Amino acid sequence: MVTPIEPPAEPSGTLTDPRALLSGYLDFYRDALLRKLDGVPEERLRASVLPSGWTPLELFKHLTYVEIRWLQWGFLAEPIAAPWGDRRPGDEEQDRWHVPEDETFADLRAAFLATCERSREIVAGADLDAFAAPGGRFDGAEQPPSLIWILFHLLQEYARHLGHLDVVRELSDGVTGE
Image (tube, rainbow, N blue to C red; front, side, top):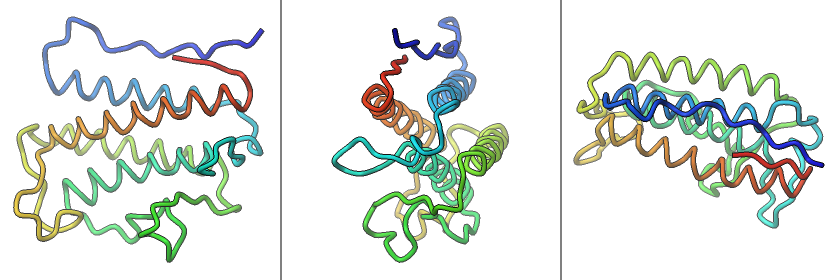
């Protein structure tokens, strides 16, 4: 019998504060991502079971860079040396994720946790109705998005990709989860 992954606790159904609700759900999905990957052997994290060829480790790195692109480079317009660092160098336009052989799950986990902490700081220090700073990801945009829109976008990215990861885990080792 395959042991299912225990889901993390969702934010309370009594939450009415939009900041607490959005932040709570982002942390819920971040935790779910870690739970779905923890304990998977490195070789399985680097193997694809899909025709498209992406691996769980590549998806993990992608979600780290999604946060960087939308909050650090996007909302704050901070200079980021490699905002598309989840892509093969030189292939940024191809939209193909990449993890070099010398990057381990432990390395990527540490980067993910640090990025999530930085994201929490950004969100805590800004109004939800504030718009992204000029420059960065939205350089030249007529109207950059608001923080609340960016947070909703991040939630849909996590939800979509965690569904993908559920299918990959079930295909690769039979583990299912919520």
